[in-house]
Length: 216
Image (cartoon, helix red, strand yellow):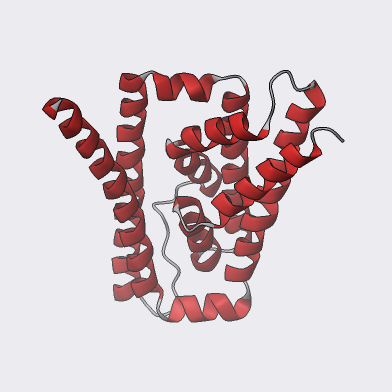
């Protein structure tokens, strides 16, 4: 029971991070509402798998190395910002097509696999490296036994599945889908704008860092 408080603290930090609106939330909700429950749950599976990849990297210390390796971490963030903007652009296109197509016709994200899109969207968020490195260092003491690391992976897998799965189930429910499809074009435009805004925010943070380093 010695490490139980650490695991509880990590679980609390993780669920709060997951519940904050971000690319994963937008993506899962979009697939569930415009496609089907199955598509939404496939996106959830991709998000959960990619989250476990980030956790594993943090446990092995790779996350800390990425943060310390300034140039490499910056390239990763640039790629992440570009991908978020790309997905947002595709959502904008889908939203515009939804406005001009027959009512109730669900748009598609250029036939991309929701599972692969979930993986790529989560992996392209470099802030995950910072979160998991910080959360790991704060919540797990040095020289913790192996079962603690296994418990961390299990906590992340279960909490991510429950939260994003709940989103997929809600937005794929009949009343939610009917409401979504009535105004699908506008909501897809909003979802695309949010994804692009997140990408631009990350790009702006990079710009500020580069300017600050130049001024020094």
